[in-house]
Image 1 (cartoon, rainbow, N blue to C red):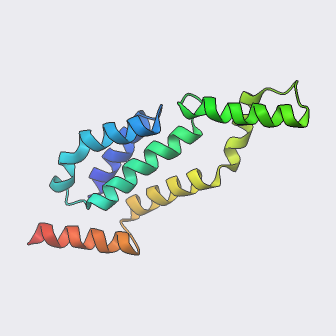
Image 2 (image 1 turned 90 degrees about the vertical axis):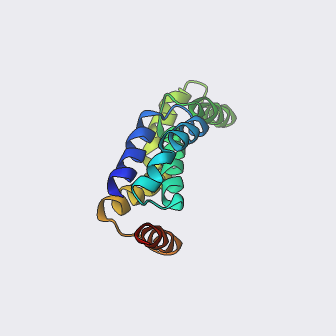
Amino acid sequence: RRKGLLSTISLGSLIFFDDYSSILIVGNSLRPLISLVNLSVEKFAFAAHVMGTSLASLSPVSSWVGLQIGYIAAVYEQIGWTHADPFIGFLQSLRFRFFPLSILSLLLVTTLTGRDFGPMRDAELAAAESASA
C-alpha cells in the first residue's frame, strides 16, 4: 500500500507542468497498481489530485503560472507599481501558499505513517477487507 502511494506521489511529482494532464497521466498509468497493492480508489484519487493540483500551483514552470502572473500584474497596475516584476511577486508569494503546502504535507504524513481518518480511513479499511476476502 505504501509503495503504491509513494509511486503515485513520485510520478505526480515528475509531471507537474499542468494539473489536468498530471491527474490524467498518473491516474491512467497507475490504475492497474490499485488492486495489486490493495489501495482504495479514494486514496489513490486523492494522492493523484493533490500532487497534480498542488505542485502545478507552486511551480514556476506550470500552465498556471501565466494566469497567476497575470493576476499579480493587474494588481500591481491597479496600485501603481509599474516598476515591479510580477514573476518576482509570484516567487515571493510561494511561502504564503498555505493550502497547497498543507495538503502536500498531509499527504506525505498519512502516506509515511499509514494512518488515515474519517471517510478515507473507512475506504482504506474496506479496500483491505475486500483484498483479504
